[in-house]
Amino acid sequence: MASQMGMLVALLAIPVNAQHRIQLEPSKPTSDSADRATWFPKPLQTYSGTIDQIDERQISILVSGQSVPERFAIERLIHAELTSVPESQKTAIDAFKEKRFTESLTGLIECVSQPDPDQRPPVWRQQWLSMLASQAAMRSGRGEIALELVKQLDARPMPSFVMGLLPVDWNGSTDPNLFDSATKMAASESLAVKLVAASWLLRSPKYRPAAEVALARLAKQNEHPAVAMIASQLLWQSKSPTEIRDEWSNWKSQWEKLPMALQAGPLISMLVTAKRLGMSDEAKELELCLRHSAPTWHPDLP
Image (tube, rainbow, N blue to C red):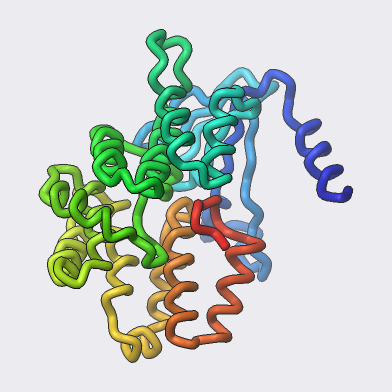
């Protein structure tokens, strides 16, 4: 009952003319900031209104009740969503969450493929729905479709909250049937495709060494910073148990520097690794974090 009341209050708090809602990382304190010395973390910031534009540099939103758009650095954007989700999108998303991936894939593609451009969601929403479709394709064994969707999405800049949903294998559960698709697409010009393919091939006894080399290259390139950060996290999966135990604090420190929109997947990888190595205290801490304060939603959350 308490949670239902909380949801009701949240809904009532959304202005009736608000179409979109965004969530931002707290602003970084300046040297003369009055709250610089406070010990507690600053809360996330949420705004409701109408998104004017999202590009590689900033997000602009006309907050309800204001006449001039607010602008924020794109690095702070954790998530963007519709305040009222159309039934077709809701049906496709619910099918995904209920693990009916084939049905979800079809529905999600239909949501972004309306013949009339005016009937399509905003571009940033199309990107998010399409990336969720790539997840559905991967989870239903359609590797080529998953990678083709990633390739199409990577043709233009993507917000970090879309990149955070790349169909990367964070928990070591890649279906071997995906290996053929990954090897065919591993030479793609898209760095995001290379990244996803390499993450799948880390599970292949035959192609694991090549996948590790590919990830090392992706981690060093400067063309696509988000890909570099994700590749660096995946490389921890190639380290020996001894290296991971000895360097655990370094891994955690590296993770903390990621944009919050990219943190959920790597945190899942850390949890799986801690359990595999019998690091019970670390695993318990990570599981509690993912269950109760995950940075963003992710399909592999416990």
